[in-house]
Image (tube, one colour):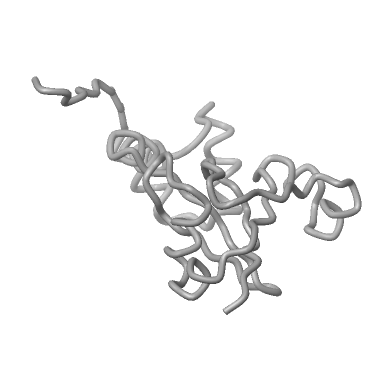
Length: 140
């Protein structure tokens, strides 16, 4: 098959449960899922499976209260990820301030991350990881 990778995944779903979930707010969906012993809706699992099959990951950027998710191929460098946000950021790239999503959640805020010294400075060749939260430093 000339380097083509085949993926075999199985997702099972119950249309009635998914229909009920679609009608609920996220706050109401959580106890519904908990009662049924379901970790996450099938739609979420389908999205994760598609990203995996397509070789994609997401990283996040923030500016004040605004957070954006960006989709890139696995193996993308910080420099190329910066270009996904804006060509000026790629052109004037200095460094990337990076925090893993899990570390951010356990810390609670960017200031807390800075306080704990968990923010890493990465260069142009850093391979962006799924869920990284990045603040690009650049000068144009």
